Image 1 (tube, protein in one colour):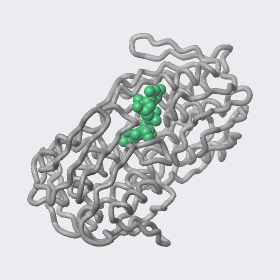
Image 2: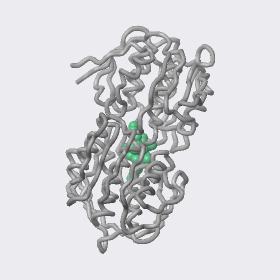
Image 3: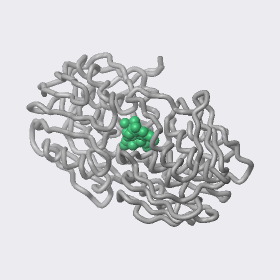
Length: 422
Ligand code: EPZ
């Protein structure tokens, strides 16, 4: 298994291009199952999760071609569709569950393995299931697989309210509703930019959708959808991650493709901590206002609140801020696994349930640490960039799931970072 070696190297300066959003691409790709016409996605990120989704869709009978070194994905599912999403692929990536809604809508039945838990939490699918059942699906759990079929062979529109604003459940129900008979209303829908991106792509395919980006989405089902070409929205989590590099190390970095509306709550917290974020014609420019950063409190919430996917990275920043910060993780039940690793680097953090209290120290010290999940892995790299001495982050396969060419992008702004193959 590869590791990454990072050495504190002072201030970081330069430009980083931000890729298309992993979490948008992972819901746009299954949309190909809703239509017999070709779907072309541009600005696709080059990530192992995209390769996993490609493998899953191909196992279902869809065609997925990766063009222009992976930046363009050409998808089509005009042939016979196999409606079984196998455990061996689904267990590798929870987002595989996003084929459930499209398969049910297109085929009238689907057998999709439950993804199983992951490091950050149990991650059940009750909201997906209840939403689709409200649309006339009969779903039964057998041998770890969800066996789903649409009563009468076709889903029907329904008004439903999500107990919590689940991103995946909103996406599955939204995709299923595009081909259901009648009108579907999703109340307490998730508002993430990735959902807005999905709705815009589905509308290009002929779907009738209103209200995406708000808590109430209304969909009029249509008989069939056509093809489309769609540019994947910029990845706000990659953007926020790299915004922290100059914040933690000093210097000034411009993130190409970044827009303030994608990271407003995050940028506000950075401003409070003493980091300047300004929108330029090409992206976002980030630098420290002056001297040592100040401690801030953070609570993760559904969009437009502070994103849970940036919590680990923010903790790395706050380890050396002046004062005490409290981070409250309200989305996942076990998302502080980076804390023990940061302690090995000299951080002072106390975790109690969903709260982590961080007492800022002057400097972290490099150490051998272990990545436990996708976002924790990059928070350790950020900490290593600002630490004295060398940090080696093991299990970087987590990193490759969500960050394309991570060493290259950090090296591009002067970081001392290299991959060590085991
Ligand atoms: C999406 O996961 C993202 N993944 C996650 O990003 C992100 O952290 C999460 O949304 C929250 O923003 C993709 O888009 C592929 P949820 P998702 O359904 O859809 C509970 C990353 O690092 N829940 O909004 O799975 C769930 O357990 C990943 O890129 C239920 O209880 O998130 C969690 O506690 C990590 N029942 C909370 O809701 C359900 O049926 C939020 O989950 C569904 C979810």
